[in-house]
Length: 317
Image (cartoon, rainbow, N blue to C red; front, side):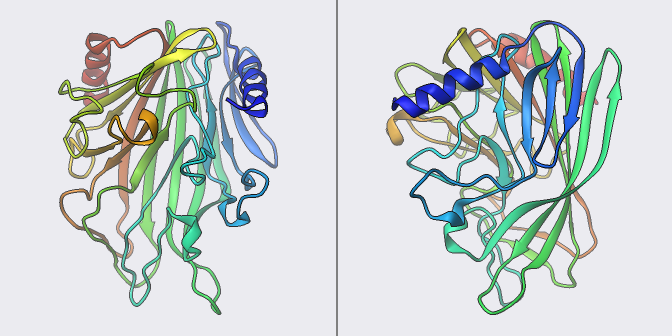
């Protein structure tokens, strides 16, 4: 690990160190931060973050979460990895699309024909002793040379955090509405969709674990369906765990998954629930589409029984 990366991890680790206490929300011009007694749980980026020095500035982006931390302060997200500079902690976008005569790729920024951006904050809520949340408006934009950016989808994106004993539960809800007069077609494709996750840079095939609700792993999990997928690996304070739960009312649930195999980038952790992995889909004008996920963020190693119990509660909500 390079010195600058090590320094960043140390600084973020101190930023994330959490203590038991009340959840709070703070908004600035650049970000929305949810904290636990003054210590960061997660940061949502309103302002565009530039890529690392020397990288193409096209990789600047807003509308993502990093860092995401466990109660003991372990960071469980990574951004701007050398193999995929556009991976941004906890983020999402569609990849292969058809919109009239255009084919905007909202994910791969290098193509310069699409993207996603923060537009404005819609609301912030706090339930004392229980949870805090915010909802922002995000825009999926189509870009063509010589034309103005065109907003294709308006998305109400809600993050809600609650603390449960020794862990955080993070609800990740998207409501996407096609605001144009043209259907956005989503051909079947191996990745892209309403939630994606990149793990810490030091997690690899030898020191971290991936497991789905069906007992699949890095070796055989890709393209399979799962109620949840969990990731665990070493951290500054012991071990860290993230599980992403898919609500049964989501389109194509239990959704198929994009899971990098063991020989991909030394076993780096990348995950994506993909509701169009098997079959094409369409987002018609004016018809909202809602996708709900819940993240279980804690300290320790894989605990399938606890994650199953959490999914059962989530599935009934």
